[in-house]
Length: 370
Image 1 (spheres, rainbow, N blue to C red):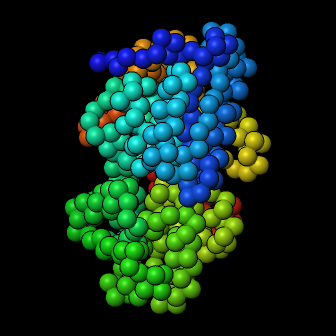
Image 2: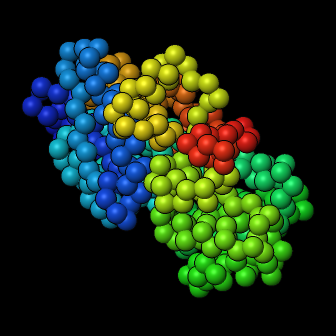
């Protein structure tokens, strides 16, 4: 591995703590609730590590930076954290933002364990410096396509905003459905308002609409329009990116937000560790934790194990990815090289398709597992 030059004290600060830089969207236009859950998981795991003696007797410290869903802001934060001497980077939710952070981390020789972003091409070229916990988009969204086909939907409309992430998701869905004689109809939200989306669904005879758009808007307005259009009473609404996972969705949509399947990265039953972490996260958040909170916890758990075994030297941390074998909240975490994926990948975390139960909107129903 080519190791870029690093500061003499890379991975150390004043000798009193081992620092990890954490990236999360904590202000708009970032998905703030996702960022809060991610941060809650990261912070809870740091407390657990320190309660168990830290890293060789030194406390683990989290240095948090808000990315606000801005790739340039994320790249600048990576530069700042590298100068501060953090041993590694953790976190980020938004795929396009994580991509910018991964590019800077790779250029600087700073290990980055990405928690939640799923874009397959997290870096342009294969890198030794970046590893990821979340499943690649091509894996998770193929499972979602399998769910759609199994439910009898092969003429799918996608209402999408311009984005590398949404375009990638559309391409995955189209390839999966085409292999089974299905079709994907693209509806451009740059040109269509919610009422026009409804008209296009009728015109194109779609049996399902997938919302590939930001939360809360325009996603919430589209759901309301479709739910209250009597012509579309039988249509399935889906949101593979996970918008219905968070409580804000239920607050804004009520019953309209139920029965909208999305991807969630949790097992059917949590391990004893996962159950204990779920209880602690619920106390910290004041609500049920999302899968994103578990991703945050697992990220720090992995990094702490690596730091204990290999120290805070950045090159040694990056070299350790293929030797990781850690029990996380959702299974045993190990990284490998996966075809088509440019980073070290956990293949794979459990994947579910779930929705909010119309009979009890705070309860989730498992519709499909991958």
